[in-house]
Length: 142
Image 1 (cartoon, one colour):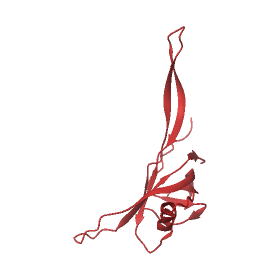
Image 2 (cartoon, helix red, strand yellow; image 1 turned 45 degrees about the horizontal axis):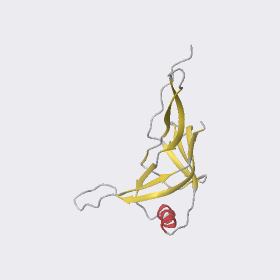
Image 3 (cartoon, rainbow, N blue to C red; image 1 turned 30 degrees about the vertical axis):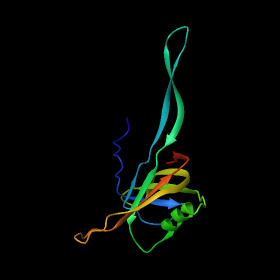
Image 4 (cartoon, rainbow, N blue to C red; image 1 turned 90 degrees about the horizontal axis):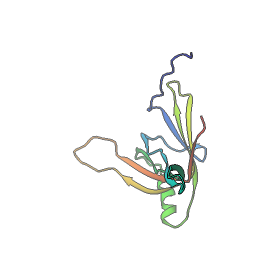
């Protein structure tokens, strides 16, 4: 029997867009896929079979502190201006030595929404922006 394998922690990661690390993000959420279930009943036996239907990939949200880097805002503005600019995205999980231990590749992603966190004169927190990406497929390669 093999030795104990501890699960990975969720705090060391990076995001690459078209193979380039564009920005540091404080959070990535929404990585998911689900497949519709089709119930099929055979007329002569009455047994119900469950078959896989269409697979859907959930939108992924990237959050980071606001800086003077405009790349994500410009990408979103291209979409607003009618210029569909799909990009491939990798979400890379790192261990405590910053070695890659897992990678999820998202294909043909584009930003469907960008939002700015609340401005509050009584706060001392980092201002965050969030970018919501839709995509056409996802695979885990490591």
